[in-house]
Length: 198
Image (tube, rainbow, N blue to C red):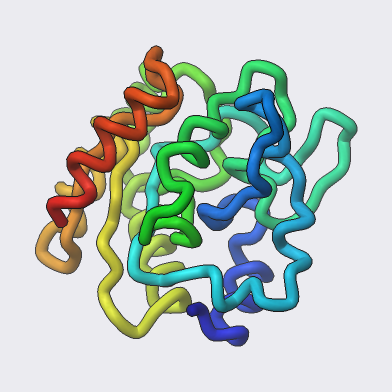
């Protein structure tokens, strides 16, 4: 369960760049309903969210908080309505597990870029950006929880950054990013094999 005060503050400060590992379940199509935000209207939502696990990506692959139809809103990140989105694999992997409802964010905020090589190059040439984002991330975690959540890095470079800056403060686990060229069944199997050893 997440406190309402934490939820509201996170939404106000980070709602356009983060979200929660909660989605509407799919119909017969695996990618269906990932962008259905009605799950956030549930009066029992806070009971379904948890602050024990934080899934951390590198950066947004597209414009934060914006839909194809041009509309903006809170918690849209990781709930894509694009035809080629891979968010559905993360939903499938976490559905029915204790990780469902965890917080999801990116370590590098406000820098949308699909090509991770370009992100690495940008950060290499702008090390102050990394430190600034790490400090912002610490603030984000303080708002989320008074305890120390497990940080689950989605992908190697996200893990590298977290490990370099936060390994003395938090337990950090690396999993494969959900955009990897792998089916949802195998993705779930592989990441739960890692997460269930925490």
